[in-house]
Length: 321
Image 1 (cartoon, rainbow, N blue to C red):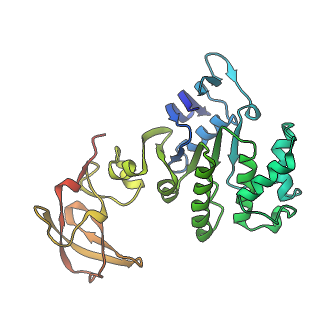
Image 2 (cartoon, helix red, strand yellow):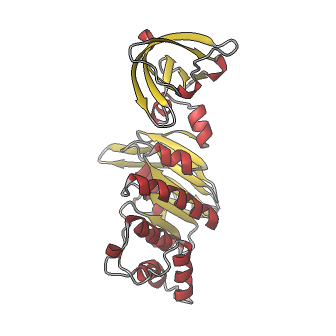
Image 3 (spheres, rainbow, N blue to C red):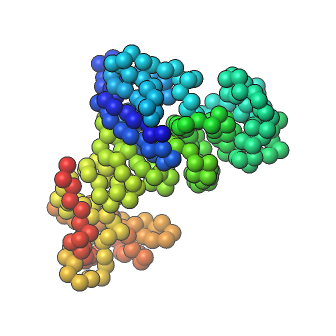
């Protein structure tokens, strides 16, 4: 069943945290709410979870109403059948891995074949042999797996992720990103994921919802968000952008050519700095009235050198917002 959000609003002390919002979270999809701190993404997630009460609007899961300001319905968190994975894992420190995963089942009275069900969850996240360990005896990645297993052992209709990888170091974060995405898809879950990290959003998601200042700016696949941003903020927030006309005409760094191809237009700039990234050089260019641009090349270019580059007109994206 799809989760339908209709006219949802929320304010805190006269500050509008979430403007009127309409959104459809599709069943079986991995949807990410992406935006900077304070954009309203966590507020929206918490209202879906039942941890915050909206001022207006309605939440439906299929035909089932979870919240309605007009009908005065507000189903409590424990009756929404959602799983949640927090940023800080939120594991019980005095409970073993097994008991942390079993906690929700015991609390809801679902104790039939509890050992088998919990063991299946343990096996799914590859924590065999660690069932009797406590959280402080686990690595960060292992703790994250426990939190995920605890969320999905209840067989939720939707799993909510609140920046679950931000507490991990960079290398482990990359590993867990791949692992988490694989687990969600293998199980066939519907996931709503909150992050400010564009790499996480682009690499993990079926759909991305970009937010700013309590409003949704664009919803689409990662490819649509990157290649055809509908707002200048999205072009700047996701990837790197070079402006032919400020906030109107955009070219991405990888679309800049160093050899003329067909009818491509020529542009000249001065190399300001060069950074080696392993697979390429990232070149900062002073383009005069066009400002600073970023381009990529396989070869280093001398700082201060005047260079010519080429842009095909079909690679220029026009923002119409």
